[in-house]
Image (cartoon, rainbow, N blue to C red; front, side, top):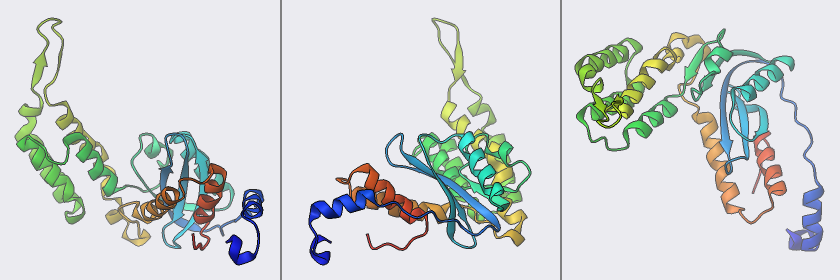
Length: 250
């Protein structure tokens, strides 16, 4: 860039650090909001809200950690700006359902399957785990009634097995023998009312994943990785420029 514009590298760096992006104000509208967070390290991240149908980000905020309070701030800010939320797609963070209790809420299928993998691993050792993992991977192929029925059948088949307890002979205390398997089942059971919201409201065009945001997050992380030697203040401007729906050749 210095050669292209006939300037020194020092001058170019100085100008880039001094430059501040103009504030972009998205046009208020009624929308299906896809919400998720992206982090660059443990304490540097962004909460982003995307208008599913217009394919534009309408809200972004630098955060240190993902909390319900940050989502509350996003909701309040958008409504104050004149936006109307028709439905919300999220990663299923506890507390978000209460925050959007008056709206259709869709739990991201990708995040749900990822949660099951964390509990059961990629290759479950137990037959019950393999069956539950296979059922979870069929979320998008089954209707709500079929999935609920198969989940109930799985629980009926393995109820005694997941109810087994292990007693510590020294303390007399007990714990469930298959805790992670129980947690995987409870995750699906708890999220079930929110896994098929997109099918119950076909007129709203609700996606069943947050992939619309995840794709841009992958691009952001790749840019940050490629520019890993750049100071964070410049990285922040690069990230915000992309979040503001600006074209870039970086």
